[in-house]
Length: 217
Image 1 (spheres, rainbow, N blue to C red):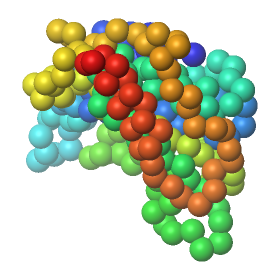
Image 2: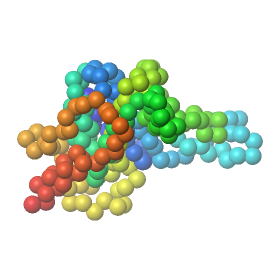
Image 3: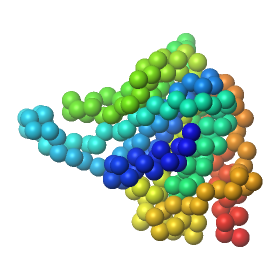
């Protein structure tokens, strides 16, 4: 999907620091996936749109992009986002595997997590909190609510808030790393249908620990 190129283009276009990047997918090959970029910053509200008595500054909405390129297994998506996280300077990658929230006994928090993963965020002071270019996100959310989904998230150094904390010999001046040589890639987690809720950084932990040891040895 050329995820790194897509993220790099968004960073150049927005010229704002990124707080986090997330990618959400339902476990069915070739379905669209939702990429979200969570920006850190404030802008002035349009004239006359700020509520009376409230500040004219508003939080910059997150960006939601629908990616419709073909894929055959969740493991391939995971490999690509691992590569993007590595090149953008991230230190870890969170993998959140969720069951469908339309399940007997599911907590209200599960529904909220599903809505957030697919870009359905509540308005803030009457202003939109997501700018979406994702026409199929409502249907994806309904499918995820029935069948489950996987969401990956990382915090980039390049284009992010973490540049001042970056004491890492693998990073260049811009907070970027060189692309990985294919032979060094660690196999991603096997594709499987999401079961009960699990949150794991195990796949990324082994990936990053191996790459760091190779880069610094």
